[in-house]
Length: 326
Image (cartoon, one colour):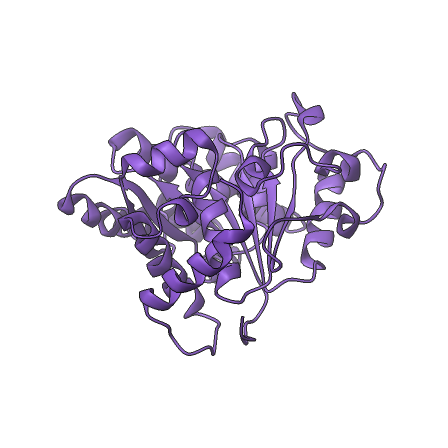
């Protein structure tokens, strides 16, 4: 496995409601990136229903995120678990956290600070479903989170609704010291609880405070999430990603990058039921190629590594699959 040049980056993976395929994509994405030479740490940020460790051949984690949150362990590095792949590590969520609707923000800031200090090229955090403050704050750990959606209308609405809430949460937290923005936002939200357009809020903010609107505009310019469309059954559904990105740009006023899609394949469903990575079990299937294409797109933002063909990726998969019990 060759050395690569990669600026450390953090991706939080969300999808609105459950069933979008976040965990299976996160696991296979992490495996694929590690096979390509990147040092990857996966974090199960589903506080209450963690399952990411199952996909990585870890049946009973020795340590979990709960040990850190409850102060049994003081450093996040102490709960990092090995996987069958040298370059791939995981921090498991803890079932003891069931029912923790909202951690104190100071506790979350401590988690985020420790995550930023982890020694890895890429950190991927698999989040739970819904729009709790926990999920929104973990998604906003960086400005480049990943949204997983499906072509179905409800899935796209859930993804849009999640992004809208994440943006308002980010604005609220980033500008909490600016009392003018906070008061203006609270007044707007009180009178417009059903509004799903950030553009309307920005027009309102400009009418109240031009200086404050410029601060928020600069923030929105730097907020650049990414989109993966999952469970594509028909060719024309691939275009749903472009449609979604345009809707986000027009109404949430942020640039979103459509980094790829995953074709629906019963073999992925079978792998998920057996809790094994599909790229190891079915290296020739279309979703394995889709994972490679997504990796190729994501790494192009930061990596100086020369691009490799899919045949190289498959060869590496077969080389490392011997370390994986299936």
